[in-house]
Length: 224
Image (spheres, rainbow, N blue to C red):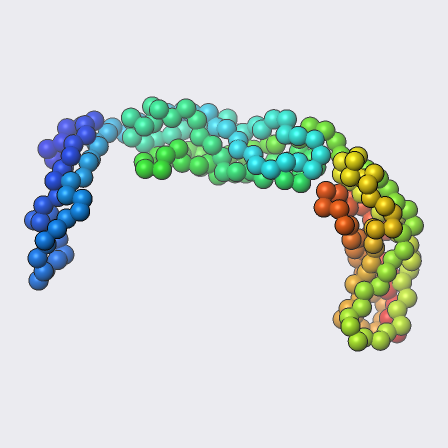
C-alpha cells in the first residue's frame, strides 16, 4: 500500500506475512529481503541529443562523422533519473569491412537499466561517413575453371574462357596479392545437359580485399 508515500519521496517498506497473497494452506515463515525501497517520482519529459555508436573498422579509411536524423529525441519518464540523462545512444552500428559511406535506420537504447523511459521516435536514421577511398587493382585474362560434383563425368565448354577481375582494398593488401592466387571458376555441379548462363565466382585468399567487379560477370556453359 503506497498511499502513505508522498510524491517525489523514497521510503523503505516492510513486507509482512499479511502482505503475501496466493499462499492459502501454507504458513509464511520467512521473507527475504524483509524490506523493499520504493521511490515515487513525477513523470517528466526532456529533449536530449542522439549519439551514434559505431563498432569495428572500415576496410579502407576511417569513420569521419556519424550523423543522426533526427539529432534530438523526446524522453518521457521519472524526473529524477531523467534530469541526469545527457544523451541517448543508438544500437551498435558495425562498420567492419565497409569501403564506403552508408545510411541505415537504427533503434535507440533506453538510457537506464532500472528505470523505464519512453523514447520518441524509438529509432533514427544514421549516416556513417567513411573518409578515404579504397584502392583498386585490375587483373586481366584470368582463366575460368570448372567446378564439378565428385563422380560426375560431363563434357563442358565455357565461353569466354578468360575474364578480367577488379579488386578493391588497401594499397598494401592489393600489392601483396599475386595474380596466380586469384582463382576464377563457375559451379557446374548439378547442371543438366544443355546451355546455361552461369555466374562467375572469384576466390581470394586475402580477407582484407573484396571483388569489385568481374568482366564479364557470367559465362556461357554448354554441357553434353
